Image (cartoon, rainbow over all chains, first blue to last red):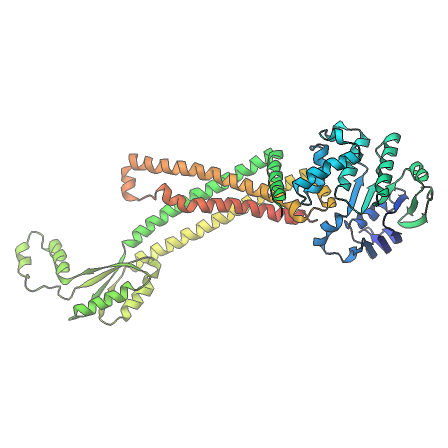
Length: 227
Length: 302
């Protein structure tokens, strides 16, 4: 479960990026977070990953109170959160298999486990046949699926997707959203930050709208406020 | 930690050296220059110190005994002197030996005059010990001790020679420490710069690693491996060059400049490298480790 209680975050400039935000997300939920550019969505993601600390309020993720978490415990905590980005952030000098295996390698997983898990994960995202391809040889949709495989290989409880369809055409955007829905159906909490209102409306999930650092609406099965 | 993780970090470190070929080469070249200079200086210093030591070993303190002292007492005093840590060896000169030596110098050509003293040794009270020391800087302490021993009439020493040699040794020590410190600083700075370039080249990869949940160790270790390997190569090259060069030069001087060889006794290449090799390698690896460790600690916090 994710819980934000009266969370505010101000940067040096003084204007709060988030102001008294209260959000609760249950395990296994699928949630859209929508809002304009600069509304505070990225700050929210950084707070959930403990890349930033809130100026005020408490954040709890999977029972961990992030405000009080010691720096040395952050890596282990992050292994429970998969992250997907708009620009995929794949390693260009490594092939599809190596990109996915990388996520297990850097947390110290054994070679035997990696050899078992990486092909299975690539099969799940439908890229088993392209395991030797390099990111530049793939379409945007395929690259995003590699990024999703990388985010999921360590079996996180939560998947954060920051504008996952932002660089994709309509077909690939829908493919990606279907994949995220399948992942959610298996029990992973999925949080998608997006601008794509067409997808938000069609998916009929919970929508949290943020504007100028404040949560302006939180609707189950809603379409969110126009942004 | 798993073996696979250990080997992964080593592989990544080596890859990083290859990826930043030019910077790695520049670092290795600078490190080579630094360790070469260090090695050169080391060779000069150890040879010089060996020559000074040689000179020191020829400087003796002489003690003369009270008149009428028994041979047993002289031996007892000899035992006391030998027991001192600063003493390397002592030589006893009996009154007869002293007379023989004196006679050869002063009655050369007048042996008949010398013979008139045959039964009446003028140097009957000139038995002495010549004391040679391990460390000439301890001469003052030894002389104070000798003066306190009962039965010793006179202690002869060469204070000027002892002080000059001792001061010279200290000066060499200070100069070498100063130069080593400067070289160390320069080399650490350069390694640190190379690691910084490596970090900036792998910025994206590091950011992803951190988000995935890599520990500080996994993020930093490849850079430390990179620094250590650069240090290792940067030390091995100049030490190899110096090994060959020094051996050749000593042989060349011995063969072509025999007058230098007769004046100075050079240490053998094995004698020099017995110490220089481990020091040089530890220095190279240490600089590599320190440079990369400081940089990664400063710039790579999860």
